[in-house]
Length: 109
Image (tube, rainbow, N blue to C red):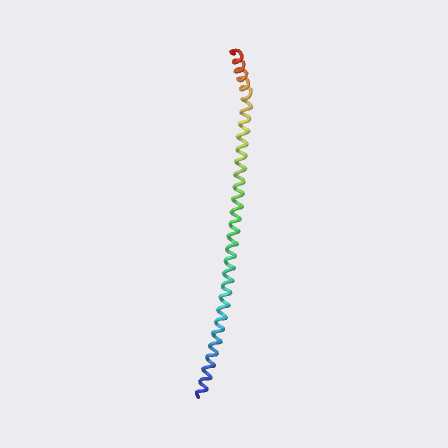
């Protein structure tokens, strides 16, 4: 094998190596791009899942708070109604006492 033939084979081998390196770089870039897309999708799905959970917890908390508020209002109304009934039953006695006090102050007066 002559010197020229060896140089041709070396150049051909170098060319094949360059092509292989270029293909490997292209494949690497393609793989990195796909990996970034996959990572972005996974992050997006995770954020969406977290948002859904937060919304569900918020709705549950809002409903629980609404029930608590209604219960407290109803309890307050019951106390007010009870106090009104008690006051109404004691009203005649209070009026009688006021009249007695008024009569007492007029007669002493």
